[in-house]
Image 1 (cartoon, rainbow, N blue to C red):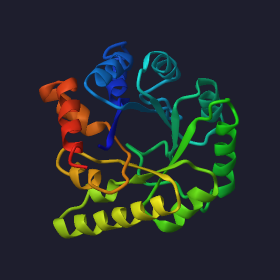
Image 2: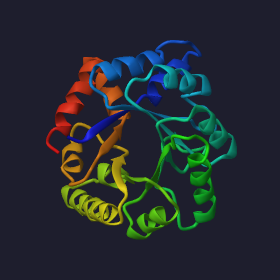
Image 3: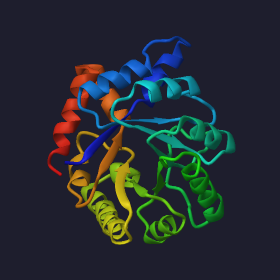
Image 4: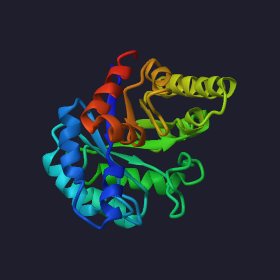
Length: 242
C-alpha cells in the first residue's frame, strides 16, 4: 500500500492568522499519526509564513513515524536541517511571492549547488538523512537527480491535479506514469505530491512502484467538515487501491 505523508503546514497557517498558539502543529502531528499517517511533512519556508524552527524542533522530538522536512537550498535552512537531522528532506524550489510551490526544481540548471547541498546533508550525521528532490515528471531532470546523489524523486503532480478536462488529465497522468517508470529504472525511490485530493489521488496511488504521497491542503480542507482524524482515514482508504 502506498504510504501517506500528511503535510501539516496549514495547521500553522491558521495558528499564525491570530498570532496565537492554537491550533498547535505538534498536536496535529500526534492526531495524524494516531489516524494512520505514515509520516509528517512540513515546509520550513524562508519567510516562515507557517512552520517555524520551534515547530520543527518539537516535531522531531515527538514524531513516532518519520519527519520529512521540505526545504529550499538557502544556506540558513540547510544549516538548520543539519542540526535537526530529520528522517528525510525534500529539496524544493521556493519563491517569496508564490502561494504554494509552483513547479519542480530545475536540477540541470542548478546542478552544482544542489549536489553540494545533498553532500552536506548526507555528511552531517552517522545516520544519513534520506534526500528527495521535488521535480517535474521529466526524464532529463530524473537523470540529473540520479547523478547528483538523490535517494528519492518526488514527482510534481500539480499539472495533473489542475487539469481542466479529462483529456488534459489523462495526458498529464501519462507523463507521470512514464516518468515513474524511468525513476524506478535508474534506481531511485518514487514519491509524488502537490494538489492531490480525494477526487484525483487514486490514479496516482495505482502507479507501480509509488512509495509515498505527500498531501496536506485537501486533507485540512476536508477536516473542516468531518474532523482531522476522519479526513486522514478517508485518504488512507483511497490509497489502498494502489
